Image (cartoon, rainbow, N blue to C red):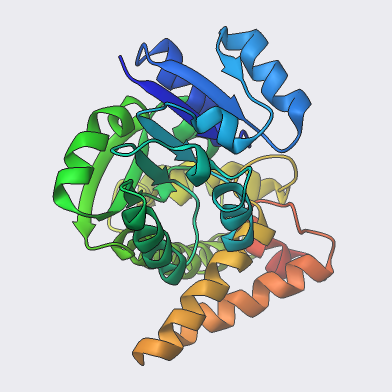
Length: 291
């Protein structure tokens, strides 16, 4: 059993923190910007909650966090009430936020000066993966630090792997999002084509999902795409645009070419303009089926 803090109780963090306590048997203290959310979690799971990141992180062996973006991470980690100011030497900070590789390297250096380990560890698998403890977790950091953190991370992971140096986890998450963006657009076009051709979509999916076209998106999103309904579930368009923006920015630095990613990012901008900021990313289908 380890003493663990979890910072950020959104749709991902809330169940992840719960697994640490119920499944992992760890001593867990949570923090959330909206205090009522932390109180709700503590009441539901029997854990503790703190009023600041620093209080939550005090004397902890591991501090895990999953917040919104680079600015959110900095607001939670830095400053007098930030987590880093409360962490003891030898503790490890694990960031599950999908953030920039630049920030990951920055955090690694900041933590190092205070004798704290750091792992950037963005996740994939969506809300269902978090609830079921079946997340894919891509990590960047030093091998010894990752080896210590892995048993804690594994509590909610289907697969957790060290990809490389600090920042490598965030870069791998960018690869993940680039692949998903192109895949969802292709799936949307294929399903829209089938509907316009008056094919029985359930029968179409039953066949092509057993062949080379199979994907997680196909098996988990085709029904909603068929109904052209995207509200209230899944990975929000706003979040995807944030992620794709980081991909495109990183590509400028490396010289990588992302023509399809740039195009799909603009398609998502059209979805936002239609009021779909919180729709699931499979809502690209909306642009093909509704004028």
